[in-house]
Image (cartoon, rainbow, N blue to C red; front, side, top):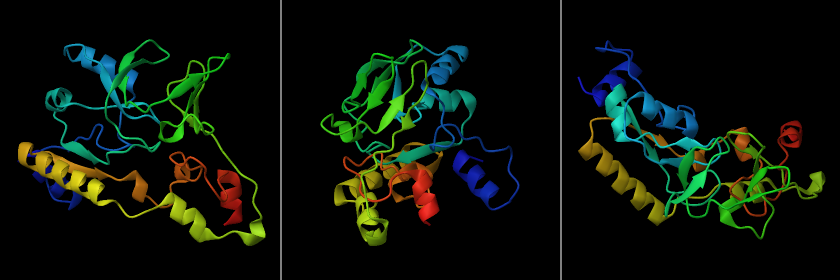
Length: 227
């Protein structure tokens, strides 16, 4: 029984040879980069810079070496862009606050203030206010509320939705198609789709972390009370 068969049977409440394992295929089953670097060391694997595939939680990419070593049954099919609206490409070195050396995308653009807090910018654009902050001695980013003034009596929900959600472009669809085909043909792992841009009801999307100038109600507390 291979991994794909094992997960399918488990989902259908059928018997399997063992319990399927997942590590890193989604945002909620990921592993923080510092911890992942230590895991690789504990497994006796060669040191390498961990790629940050989710800058929000600073999750590391779980590579095939670890998947094979631990017997992981899943692998993620991720969008080319991340939580903050820039592509995971053209990797560059960066250092976490605990000293762990990692790789981050080219548009992972940050600024540190005098208190040691690190600010991150939507789509890597420093001409607009930052959308997230990593506190001094922190391990991940907290979202910042960039709330413009608004008249609650004249809000248009379509404006909020159109800015937040859109149909995937042809380029994105072709990327997902090619990546899914590659993973299906070259592994027997269960492929898990991770499409954060298509999620409804996720409170972390309300502040608009990938949007340069978010409109409407973007403060989660005010957003909840308005509904």
